[in-house]
Image (tube, rainbow, N blue to C red):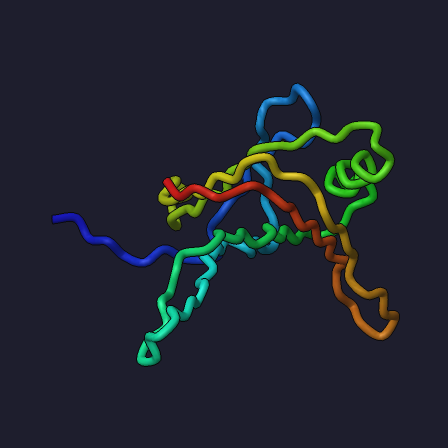
Length: 147
């Protein structure tokens, strides 16, 4: 029987095709977060029934995917966001977040659909620190599928 060891969080890649017509490219980020979703619970009280509240299934909500990387002067992430703001190109993209083992083999994959850049941010500039500038991009999407 093969062992099923837990996977490390530091080995991952993101596959996106930000520019229209480009093949998906494997991109590496400092961190990826937002791989979560929840289904709303709708409490309903029935008239005359005072000992319980029915818990009905509501809408499923998807969190934005948050990508962080070191900022460079030629950031494709901010270029994609700028195209959305100006309306010059509003392409929604599909993407994958792939968890790797320490030998860099694909082990788990989350696919998101119809993503678009809803927020971009750069870290604080502070002359008293010697840190890298980190850019953050949030991608709104229409659902994540595992597998």
